[in-house]
Length: 111
Length: 114
Image 1 (tube, rainbow over the protein chains, first blue to last red):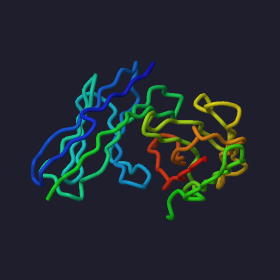
Image 2 (image 1 turned 180 degrees about the vertical axis):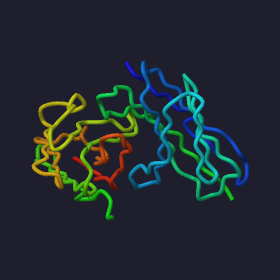
Image 3 (image 1 turned 90 degrees about the horizontal axis):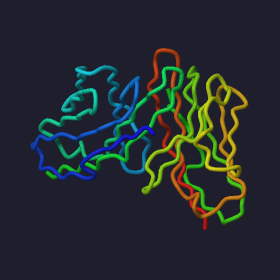
């Protein structure tokens, strides 16, 4: 069965303290790895899609990378407004749009 | 664009009652998804439609749950009868389909079954 594991479950950083979130997956035939951000009381907000090992994407202070077994979301010099839960999800079947989500990493950035 | 619209935003009901959740996808999107989010199980896909046709309902927990998409701009998720273990946040998402597979989520409906 497809499995998506995110670590750590929770992370506290000081403003400006860079770090990385991990998403490891066991999927045969990955067709896409997705990162979302979720604020309390809101729906997940799309950040990135990665399709092949070695691919990288950036948006402001966030950079997502992908290997054959895991993805990292690097946060450089975070600000308090980066506090949120970050979810990753994988898509396996080329004929299916089904996504399997990890349970997320709750990030808190203190000023 | 208004994004995905869900109603109601909050629903409190008693065990045994029928609950209907509603979703309006982004205009022009071909696929619609219903998810459930709980602390224990995270975000799980219940069912998804493509061009109004149910494609994968393997995540629907049991016969008490049913979903319909009568047209491209409206979908419902119904629970009858509801049970306390159905308490969760239910999200609807839509995607353009084709080569663009990004899913855009609505704000969710928080369901509490007493």
